[in-house]
Every structure is written in structure tokens, then in C-alpha cells.
Image 1 (tube, helix red, strand yellow):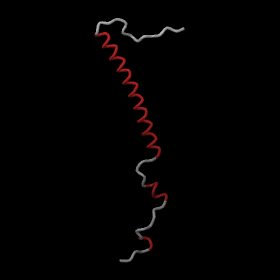
Image 2 (image 1 turned 30 degrees about the vertical axis):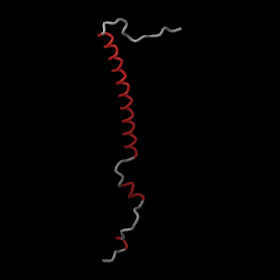
Image 3 (image 1 turned 180 degrees about the horizontal axis):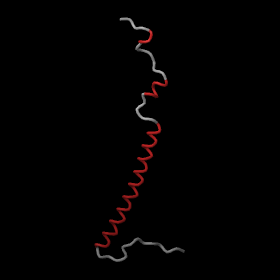
Image 4 (image 1 turned 180 degrees about the vertical axis):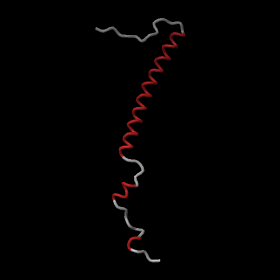
Length: 75
């Protein structure tokens, strides 16, 4: 069965067709990566806080004194 002019299989898609079938927009990707970076930074800060609390608890359970954070005197 011969192909008609508009049914050729080797026809390259037009530029607007590629953008129309794109699964995720650039704005969506930017928002996703911004949220991912924010979650990673907040997770890192939260983990550091938990480590500090754990060290203070270990010190207190060891019946030691001066378990608080050591503050260097200003000059």
C-alpha cells in the first residue's frame, strides 16, 4: 500500500510537537530541585542538632558536670 504525502513514516517532528509532548516542564524541574536541596539542607541541620543532643545526654548520663556547650570567652 503506497504512502500518501501526509503519511510518510520518515517525517521529522516539528519543534512545537517536541515541547508539547515533554513530560515535565523546566519550571517543574526547578521547583523539584529547589525543594530537594532545601530538604537536604534542613535534614543536615536537624541531624547535627540530634548529634549535639545525644552528646549532651551521654555526658549527663555519665554523671559528669559541665555538659553544656563550651563557650570561649571573648577578648
